[in-house]
Image (cartoon, rainbow, N blue to C red):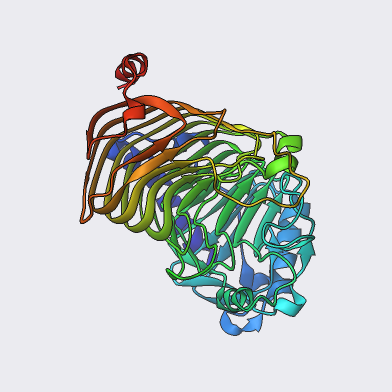
Length: 443
């Protein structure tokens, strides 16, 4: 596509955004990172790339990013990816850039595991999440960058994860698999109108970031693909996830903040996380918090979520040795269909990085509100099982209606709170008059 046509297309797209937002007239947090016009547009083809699905274009991507980084054009630069299949190894993003995927554009990861770069583990994890030591570099990565946009006309970023999944299942990998997109120590990031496909490991992982908007994205991986979490905000603040579809082999959205003694030492919480108008399917959890929460998780709002064919609809999970806290969590207006368990809040979930975790680092869970939940074909209503000598407190359920094929009761231990309008009837631990008053004020 000629450059003038590209500019005209982008001008039309960006000029329509205010009208679209006004027409929607719905709640949104996306304004924390607005769409930005870039004064300069370059195409990946200018750097010798060939979109035939066979030519390896790693050097072309590196040259393009290097040019954007070092010329520092005022207002930033848009890197245009035309229709075609652009095979490449991993590459970095840089500040003040837009990665724009045209309709029909596919950025496809090379599958040469033996040649995939290694990077240091995250400091809040202390090691690779799957295996000790280093980890494989994420396919698309940015570290310490700002003012970054990944968008387009629903082009695809394809991790070609099947070779990684097979190696993992055969236990032949020596290091933790790569994420599809990982942004570290970055701020003012917008990801929209892109399809993420077949990640080797987690799909979208903002870690140690602030001001991140992920909106109008599709995340896909096979139902049996291992550990292909959809979107995992991790030790990050002011994260907005809206209007997206996620169907993967693991948790659709999982809020995290570091792993045991490493997360405690790093001490960076996740806070100000909003998830709104999400639809999806997973054999594991729909909405998850944890299990890695050692830096703390607070001020999370989840609303207007549709889940189908999921293992656990809402899953808040931590473990002795994690430390940290989970507090001020509100989840509302959730529809579920064909669910093994609707709600699980548990203090015995997740493994440890090594034997050096502190067994006295007991997490706290306080102030969890779950309301306006409707579930059909629900096998088990749920369980809320706190930690002995550290019970979960102020857990409030309201207007939770679950209909299913089984008659399993709720299971609750080491928890205090209240339940209003819950079917099937809740466990007796959620009946204190003090908690009932607290929950009534919230609802």
